Length: 278
Image 1: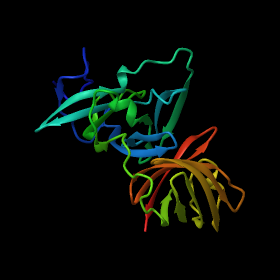
Image 2 (image 1 turned 90 degrees about the vertical axis):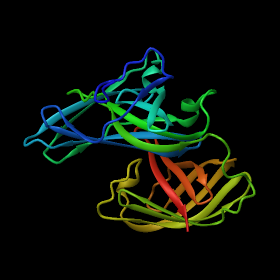
Image 3 (image 1 turned 120 degrees about the horizontal axis):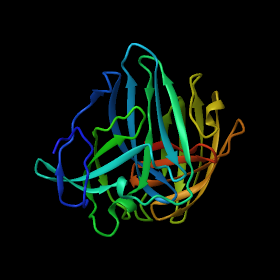
Image 4 (image 1 turned 90 degrees about the horizontal axis):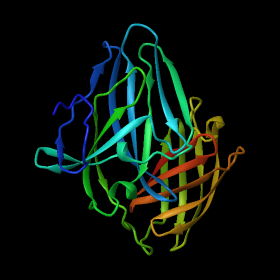
């Protein structure tokens, strides 16, 4: 099976395949790499896959893709199980049923030489594992569904996938949690109980801050206050930020020292932030 072409399956399980590395394609115009990470919302752990597509040509290039109301369309995500040096395809987003009447939004970009496009796709870990796949380490690959077509699969790394309780109530999680993304940094001193999370802290925003979900307007520094409800590893609450920003913030504990969190906005969806316990 040629790993540089779309893998067509009659059945997902039982097909072995290998994946290529970063590639330059479409008349040597675009260079594509990919990555996947665990992100968290109040509903639990999700896999977020991203294709990074760079214009390596000598002139401006156009690229486009569609995203439906469920967040699908930009990428196909393939999940593989290890068997020695062989990877066996055990799940693919290409098999997901499309929602009837779900509108598709067209994303169109003009990239100057050296600029990047980053189509993304996110799916709950529970949807991948379902009732048949065990928790464990899996390899991931993505296929960008763009125009012009980039039809070859690109490896997106390996992830440990589990949807079970990792940090039970009663575990000591109190302390300072910090994180930063896109020029916006947070520090929170959090108090944890079996059913709540609360605390105060501060933020620092660089002049180049481009954080989404309404936080991109922040500059300088200010204070934070957070109050949330907790259900096992998951939590959801409101972050009160001086400077007029008060977004919902929630997430999931990946372990005793890591929160996969996200802010939410009506128009932009989730803006992800990882917090680490100091």
